[in-house]
Length: 112
Image (cartoon, rainbow, N blue to C red):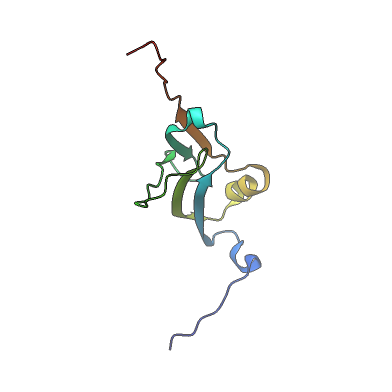
């Protein structure tokens, strides 16, 4: 009949239960403008086999991007089975997101 209920963290963190997780990356700010060329980020979550590589999000807007700010607007959904390894991971590890960029080469005035 369409009944809905909410679960609490206490309900979800039992061994053997499945847990849905969403990893969201919105923006990277405060980046050096000289290194904001071909920017991407990457991370490796607990149960993933390969790093997730996130390209920048390109808006089709008329306004230029803010210097030193890259928008990603990324969401990644994954599901884990709660076990001792996962509980140890969330209690003692962290999710590290690496932001990579390339130096923009500037031609000097005397070079063509």
